[in-house]
Image (cartoon, rainbow, N blue to C red; front, side, top):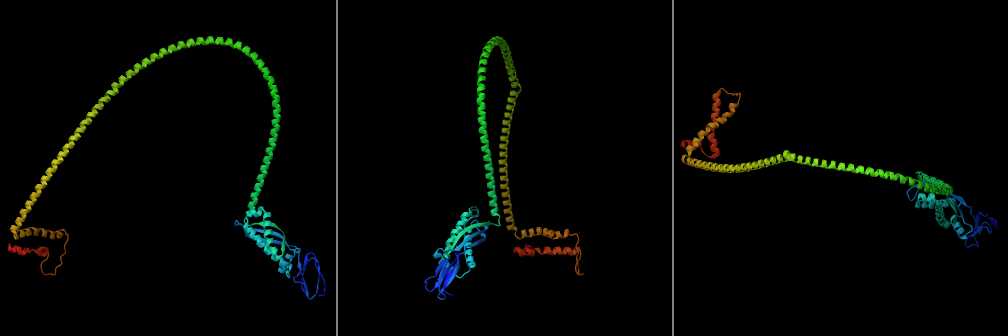
Length: 426
């Protein structure tokens, strides 16, 4: 590289570093003398970059997903030496495409963050506020990279849920409503002006009619005054006639009233006699028989009461007598049974074994009868014999007798009394 001047256009800046420079020399849009080998010169673009910032499906503060597209114009600021120096530190040696991507990612992040902090209505209805917020936040961040945000504009808002369409429909309805209200107000104002004009027209007409009516009234008053005089005389004549006729009619009505008074007095007297007759008839046919029946029922009730009282007293007396008789009978029966038991005990003591033998002899037929009772109920008895001994009824009788002879042994086993011994002793 030969020594000499190096130039650049207004959309570029020269960065000279090396010998003679403690820090790089920045030359935006101009020329500079460069020594080869000991000095190095580089260029950085100052072109304005257009960024299309896409933020698809971002949830707003209400949780509604929307997509936003913004258009931003950014560039490396060449007029500010400090910002140009910062940009050189960040982007020197990188192509314009790389700078473009870095600025785009930064802007897209800020755009998404601001979308998440606002509602759909705020973004949709106040785009200027949204654009200003993104512009301010992104500028404060990109300025640290030496990049200036020239402008930012919200290009498009979309959603897949139909939320914005609903907002548009609501706004359309509002506009239509306002249009109808405006039309109604215009129609109202027109009608008011028509009414005012009609009122003025009618006022003029009424004023004219009032003049006509006033003249007509004066005529009618004068005519009425004349008519009053005529009618007064005519009425006086008619009233005199009607007064006389009324007096005559009043006398006739007074006579008729006197006749009616007499007739009414007679009717009242007849009604009083009829009431007296009916009162006496009522006493004869209803009250006196009712009193007699009442007296009869009262006497019957008293007699029935006395009968019930006497029956109750007789029943109580009979119960008392019957109780005393039953008590006497129970006492006598108890005494008789006690005497009998005493005598029986004495007899037992006196007779001893003989009594026992006697009871045994009385009981044995009963025992035999009880033993033979099941046999008497049998319809058929089958007896098997080996050929030795008795058979038939004789065998059956023998079996019964064997059971009876075992009774003394059973009694001895149960009571300890030897009946056979007692019999021999007796």
